[in-house]
Length: 425
Image (tube, rainbow, N blue to C red; front, top):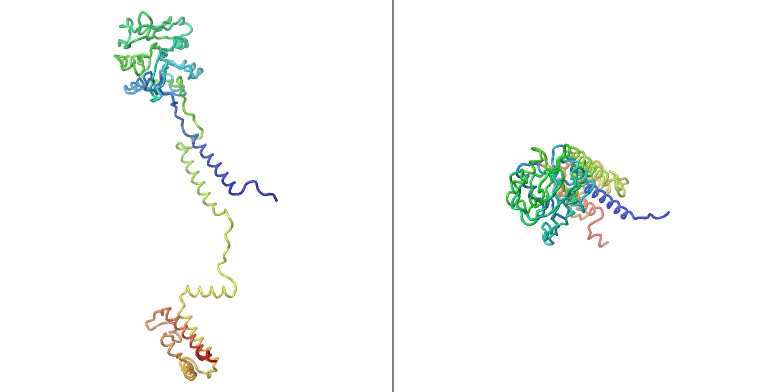
């Protein structure tokens, strides 16, 4: 017979580890992943840096707009009435197919990219340096939404103007340094100058696309300038519908939503109740089955067999019943009768007469103990009162055992002699 490959303890350890790993995998698969990646310094609504858009997101929510972030399922979040915000798409991080699908939304607000940034090593949510991107980045982004009947197009940069000759919204954009503008055929200019449009609109059938050429009027560092905050609210209100969601697409910045696990359904109501009941049932089943493992317990019979066991069982039963006085009384009288037979007492003697005859014989033999006195001192009676004292209560066991000991010693003296006499024989 070959020995097993694994010992019982090793196999138990392997099975326990496998069960723990399986339970951990099920538990971890139900947890949502954090949709925010490590890079939160760029142009997204999770970013509080100078080039981020956390400010406009919070402003919309504080003014009662239904502003949302989406890291997956963007079109479902936008629906038929919502507005999709594409703030500076990053082609190096986003999913190109997902971006093209997002362009099918009915209302789109596109912000062209302008800045390259470097994350601060000491404060990851900040940027340590920014510089202008090459002009082809915003040009390529614009071409994705302004292709077809709207070409030719161009993105230009110039000094920030003192005034905007074209301004349909009333609020004047505030900024400094270099402004980024666009020139697109068949685009309606909402805010612009002689150099190009800062905000423009392209309409294609039932779709509206609003384009902001320079992100500085919307990002965190620019929205606090002048009337930029009020201007951005007017821009979003001009394209959106009342009460409709304004969804910021964060997949264009490389963020991904949490993976949904089918196992999560077992931890959600009402299915969580069934899961709890199954766990409780499994625990009860395990507890009920633990007695079946290991070596079987030795069977102990309720009553033993053999002479010694019979005597022991009888003594236990008598002790349990509390018949000590009766048994000891009978032992004393049986000892008296046994001594009388051994000494050939005259026939017809019984009770006190027999005890008296034995005492006279004992005095003749030099016995130091008196049978009558032993029985009298320990209240050993005869007949119906045996084992009961004068008050009718059961006698104390100490007295009964003392009586039995005295009777036993008296028997030895009268039949064999005292220890002194036996020593000289």
